[in-house]
Amino acid sequence: MSRERRLMDTFVELADTMVDDYDMIEFLQLLTERCVELLGTSEAGVMLADGAGKLRHAACSNERMQIVELFELQLEEGPCFDAFRTNEPVVSAEPEEVARRWPRFAPHVRDGGFESVAAVPMRLRSEVIGALNLFSSHPVALGTDELRLAQALADIATIGILHQRAIADARIATTQLEVALESRIVIEQAKGIVAERNRIGVDEAFTLLRSYTRSHNRLLAQTARAIIDASLDPSALAPAD
Amino acid sequence: MSEFGFESERVDRVTAALAVGEHDPSSSVCAAGAAVVGVRRAGVALMAAGHTLGMVCVSDDVTAALEDVQYSLGEGPCVDAYHARAPVLAGDLADTERDDWPAFCESALRVGVRAAFGFPLMVRGICIGALNLYHDYPVTLTGEQLADAAAVSHVAARTVLRWQSFAAPGSVAWQLEGVPAHRAVVHQATGMISVQADVSIDDSLAMLQAYAFAHDRAIAAVAEAVIRRTLRFD
Image 1 (tube, each protein chain N blue to C red):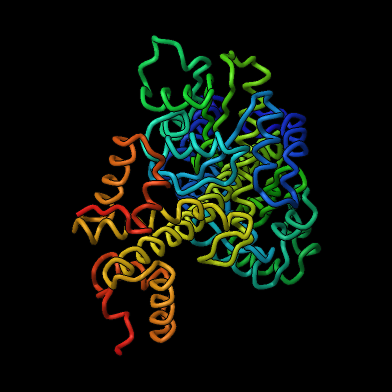
Image 2: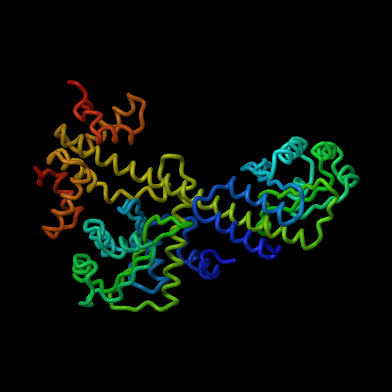
């Protein structure tokens, strides 16, 4: 298959993965594997910033790469960090340069069997959410075209991740709103049941529900749901006289 | 870059018109929404799993009454827009060819409403309710008006979720405190009827709705009668 064709397939594949049954880890795993195929580097890895802005390991094309990335995270030094901080691609084609730029991290690169490293930021406009690491076991100078391709793959992944996060945020807020509003409804229904069962007014029924809830250290909605599913007897709420 | 195909200019203009930054989301928001599109009335309903949770706002009493009708009957532009996840346009409710919401159309025409439109409140692919627009004359919305209406529903949906995102877990955002309130009597009556008729809550609500429909009364009025104990269901 031609490189161009493989490239097209990869973009389609990545876009496809984003739609249904989106699994972030699987998606990033696919990204790292395709990076290796298309860019000619030995391994690839993705680091993403957590809610506090701290980089975390997300996905790797293999185990060896993962160990080196974990050292990078521990030392907080390396190409991924530089790309993340500067929002610019980072390329170090020779072991000597790696040693010069990241003196503490360089030995781990060597131990992992890598000689050259590169990283591109994962960004949407000014927002940087992580970086894509590209390591090779031989000296590789990624050219302008390769870097541009690496950035394009990182960009597509970034859009997918941001989109997914936005959906997840909206879903959480929607669910919370639904639950909170449903709770209100359930409480009103329970007031009606308690009022009818005890032959009292709805205000009085609310007082009973509230005092029962307080003395049993529950939430009002919990008491209300128990009344509705009949696990709590409404007449048991009335104070014994 | 525009979001969901909205020109950011339009969204900015609608956001400014609705003044949804700081203010209480009462009728002013809906009135502003109607004004932006150039129709008489507007209402914003929150829905989940196909049923109405309550109204965020209504521009006036006629709208409130029509929302009540949609809630009672389970039919109308709001319900359809929610299910279809797409705009629902009825430019002339008196059109005899119409056969989708016979009871809703009859109620609307009786209170002088001649056109009704529903737009889903979509946020990131999730539908949380619908925007209803009503007009007192037959009207065909222009492309501009349709785009504005879609922008109003978009801004309203985002605003609701933004409010809710600041609310404490388990509670409703203060701006949405009033959402289920005007239905309170309906839910209380539903609880009472479930005891009187010894049926489930869902069946009890259906009985209340059926009674209101059969006697041509507002569901809230019937509910009031149940709570005052002048009407029983046993």
